[in-house]
Picture 1 (tube, rainbow, N blue to C red):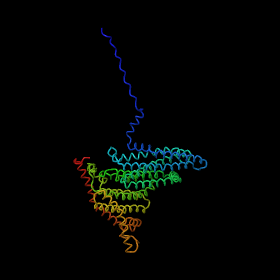
Picture 2: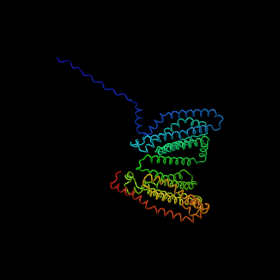
Picture 3: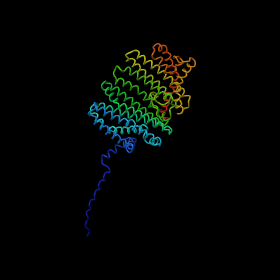
Picture 4: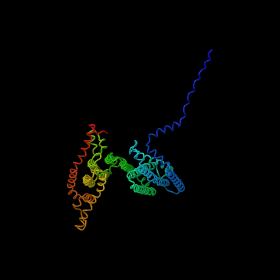
Length: 516
């Protein structure tokens, strides 16, 4: 007899493993993977440091002291809200203008000294991502410090004397100024890559940020800022002033970041296009600000003034535009657009001193409509003529010295040392053109009494001599225009050579001889 069959019992189903983290934490962890790695690391290092805890403790202590003192004087003060507002801003200024930028400076300096930046560049992080992470970390600290001082800001509104638009616009100013100061600090650290320059850069950066912080604190603590804000709101000039300050600060920040990025890139990478694009972007931004944020009666003066300022900025950029190595590097040549028209349009923005001179000439040509528009809108003929004279004189001297510097750079070796030598000789050349004729007058005439043809290469004296007198300008205008045409004709073959090099690279790309 067979044994009775035993019914098999079902095996118990395995219970699910307990989750190591709640769903919300897992979700935030997954999202954090998309954050900038430099941002995460900088915030972690800043929070773990002892200086952070001490800064928070000191800030909270000062907030309590200020709040206690203000509450005790509230019944006697005429504008208690403004006093609390000024005290809060005076406390916020050193945090966002000195503490945060110096932390970014020290972090960047340590990374450059220990070679961490080179290791980061071997990953997928680009110099742009590294610099963006530094700024994002600074903004996290900015939000934290503003949160610490938010009780004072709220108290200033409740005590009257300060309105919400003023507080909001002040936070925008603080945000932008913190960005600018941090970008300046990071750029200063990136430029001091040599060990011998690090101590000088550290001292210079701390001194510059310290002066800015002290001046800001003095301006705020004396109620100068709150009174200025009140006048801007009452006079209706808050839009042009605030937008102008923010726009100028953003352009300054971008320039600092471009300088820092330039020092993080390899020597064969494209370091020039960003600077040239920023220079050309200033033109439409300036015109848009004039017509979008200012009254009609001020537009003529602003257009002429901004045009003159942009011409001076272009002259400063020319020091670097026309002193670069002449030929395209292998890396840049591999990224030239394959289309012929696109390569032609991109030529003024690509590296090389020949294309740099072409870029400078093109920028001066684009300034002509700005001055013509400003002269057309000007209410007086004197102001209109002044703008056109300054454009002719300033543009001519800019092209003359740029062409001379371009020629001088061609006599030097095609190395970075040759570029640095040419940039050093540029102010020497201008100083010699100003000082030597004056010394000749002293030895020959016994004094420097009047302008003559020997001082023609002195841009400062010549512009001042011809700018304000109609008779003098009418006499020398043909000579000025002839000099401009002559210097452009002299360097025109070099500019065409720069364009031809780009076209050859584009042709090689189309034939498949250069791979991107």
